[in-house]
Length: 94
Ligand SMILES: [Zn+2]
Ligand SMILES: [Zn+2]
Picture (cartoon, rainbow, N blue to C red):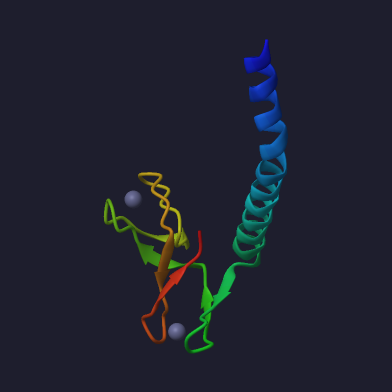
């Protein structure tokens, strides 16, 4: 019985940490959604506005298509980022 109480207490103590982590995750997901919805990403290095919907080549299956450059409709691969059109710096999105 004491063991169960101990475990329950541990979860209770840890729950605020899980809550904070959960909120952080939600905020991040929300930000990503907003970014993808806006369709543009401003490069933090040179300040150029990069369109997300452009002619892009998939890094995995090499399919070139118009559409969201972060997601390939041919193989379903999702990229975590892309290189800035102007300065070539890697912009991490996801
Ligand atoms: Zn692909
Ligand atoms: Zn740039």
